[in-house]
Amino acid sequence: MDVQLILKELQEAGILEGHMQELKSLTGGTSSEVTAIMDGIRPRYVIKQNDPVVGVSS
Image (cartoon, rainbow, N blue to C red):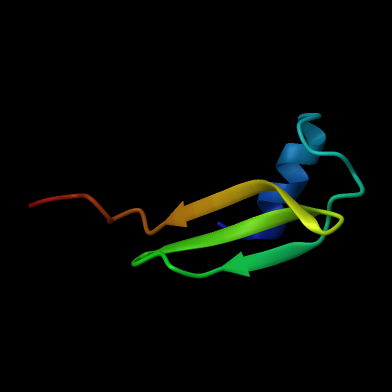
C-alpha cells in the first residue's frame, strides 16, 4: 500500500494531524518497509509494511 494513501486515511480518521506530512524511511528490516511520520525533528508514528505473502507457509 502506498504510504501517502495510509497518511490520507489516518488524517481522515482523525488519528494524524494535518501538519505531519514529513516522512523518513528507516532501515534495518529484513523484508518490511518501515517509515517514520515526523513531528518536527522527532518521529511521532511509525508505519511498518510487509509483503502480504510474508509469513504464509505452504
